[in-house]
Length: 365
Length: 139
Ligand code: FES
Image (cartoon, rainbow over the protein chains, first blue to last red):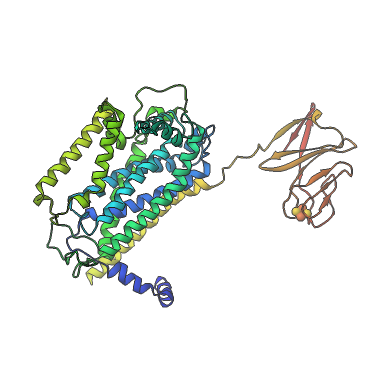
């Protein structure tokens, strides 16, 4: 039955050729490792966020008077509403976490280097956009947590010289966070950012297809034909392993492991994405004590607190982000093995430790 | 040969696990989307008798659908489904003529729901009602 359908399609649109080119005949480096499957995991997470987001939209009302109630309704009344919402909330946290791991593996294996600068830049932009979509989605439930986290986050824009105060007002659609903020954040969260992110994912994958998979700098001997800077060159891997079924199985097992962790959090730690303030409707006249952003913004939050002036804190962050974004243009040596790049490795580890330290500090203070 | 059998077995396992996962994910989504039962009005409704003048009609929601209560000129009380039996529009009460008219294709019904003219194939469904101490209980 399936075979006949396949034959039928093949006769008409030549599926066989695509399967040959993209699946069975698409060869990956022989020494490819598990870390390379994180991209597929991220694709699955994104798809899940889109689906659960669409489902939530059926009952969610993006109106300051009704948002909190509608979320409560989803959690308590709609059959399995809690499951859909938890998947969406936990999924957003997991997306950031897996994204960070994906970037760390790229960093340590030196895959960002020429000719893959564009892959890195699009990936880095995706990280920024995912942070943006998390931030705008955070406001949606219109709880005390949403309200004040957004107040604090938008407020940091006021440090920008000259236009700062105006910028804050523009972001919020008013002097304070209020119904107009919910409207614009919801539009960004549910319409603008998903489309932009999907487009960038497309670009990211397109670039990946054009440059070819980079072989890991360690493990079994590589099979790559090296890049010469003179002309366009697709890095093929003759004698490598086929994507289907070999690496597809690796992708599948990574996705299964991801789901095991994801569902464990959803079912056994449902409070993970929430603090008690998430269960109180927003009250613009009462700031709760200890208002803190989500874990992946804690380092930024703490940096802002350390520096004597907000402008300085913001500039340091901007500089760090720009440095990371432009890394492939700064680090130009072709050596990719992490152990043969001691300075780089030290910097990466120091950077990670600094980030963790800042986050923990921000969490505790 | 042994390899072949092992491959088949694993294939069946994967297919089974995938099917189980699809059901486990699909059932909550189905329930989430399914219309919520017990919504849209109670199955019993009490209306104070004084609310209705002779010759008037009162529309209300009953068991998730539209219904109408009329008091005829002779003082008789009738409760009917207000959904036209033709294509499902909601009938209107024409007080002057003391009959129902469907705005969609001109169906006409008498006060007890029988078809007087137009395309509707069946009379309007009757809803039982009881009157006790000035209260009309419908359903
Ligand atoms: S629906 Fe009432 S006459 Fe057609």
